[in-house]
Amino acid sequence: MQSVAVITGGASGIGRACALRMANEGHAVAILDLQIDAGRETVELIRAQGGNAGFFECNVADHNSIAQAARQVEDTLGETRVLVTCAGLIPHAESILDLDIERHDRLWQVNYHGTLHSCRIFGRLMRDRRQGAIVTLGSINSLRPMPLPAYNVSKVAVHRLTELLAMELGPHGVRANCVGPTFVMTEGLQQKIAEGKRDLSVMLSQQALDALPTPDDIADAVAFLCSKAAARITGVLLPIDAGWTPGVSYYSYAGGLPWVRT
Ligand SMILES: NC(=O)c1ccc[n+]([C@@H]2O[C@H](COP(=O)([O-])OP(=O)(O)OC[C@H]3O[C@@H](n4cnc5c(N)ncnc54)[C@H](O)[C@@H]3O)[C@@H](O)[C@H]2O)c1
Image (cartoon, rainbow, N blue to C red; front, side):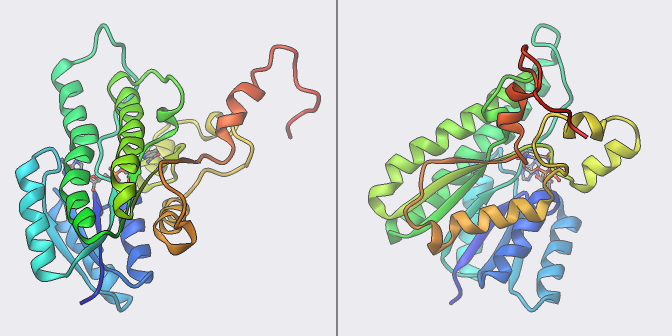
């Protein structure tokens, strides 16, 4: 049987790009998502390029829902070797004092608890077989404060969780790493830019390179972290940020820049 790559949130955006990429790497791909039609569309895209895939309706905020999906994945597709946790909610800026606490808790249920549940359930299978690679979706939010109280802190937690997983799973031959994208040019972001809700020039002004990463750029980094080429890499947060991390302090240096950005 083929090895299986499980992609939570594989129905759209970064998750879909990771799913297509993992199929190219030779894995059977399991899409775990709430969105049934879009999830099946990802499966069809993979099949159209000659790959093997299945869709499993799943709410990552619910431990039992993932456990059930895991059983179905292993019964129908094969043994899980890769887990990429892309399922997530992305909010707008908000104030801590004025935020809607139910929306806050819901975001944590998906972004943090969903990642925890997914890593526990599939991590146990990997531990028992002494092989596997996990990649969690952090963010530049894992690295710096931003006015997104629920999201920002949840991404710090996802990063730390990944470090702990790396330590616990490492002796069993299983690796766990985190990727930290800046704004990614997904269809969702393209729409926000078109509607004037995001300003591309502001986003680009803080980073070294003059383009935002695409979902395929994230999938490339995820594929690397899951590959043999990364066999001795575990517990890292890999920023995929076009140079945003050095850029935020570099461009705000109070002594001024020694050159003019064109
Ligand atoms: N897009 C960006 O700019 C960006 C930047 C940094 C990090 N990230 C992270 O990357 C991940 C994917 O982001 P995206 O831009 O592709 O978002 P997206 O909205 O396109 O995809 C998220 C997917 O998760 C699924 N999902 C949401 N709640 C779920 C649940 N409870 N159970 C199962 N599936 C659920 C959605 O149906 C959707 O298919 C998220 O964790 C996000 O925080 C995104």
